[in-house]
Amino acid sequence: MALAKFKIVSPKDGQSVDNIFETLLINTDHIVSLKPIRMVVDEKLVLGFWIRTTNGKKYRAVDIPSSLKATLGEDEDHGSTTVLNVLSDDPSQHELLN
Image (cartoon, rainbow, N blue to C red; front, side, top):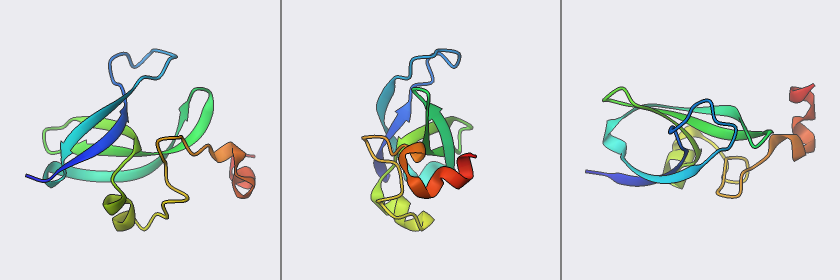
């Protein structure tokens, strides 16, 4: 079993405006797909990850283990961190947002 720590957006209430972050241990052997995404958190566009596991569960993560970021080819500077990386504050991202 290969457990790794992920910081996910709580799925308790999908319609809730307030985002609650939880730390979750996921067995990386059971991850079917991991996709970089952009998502809105606290009215800001942030980099995140969409995770799907073998049991069909889906999670939105704002932080994943650095080994998985490296596998995706993401720089740790450009990937999400615990202190959310806000795309709208990055001058190089303004073209994408407009």
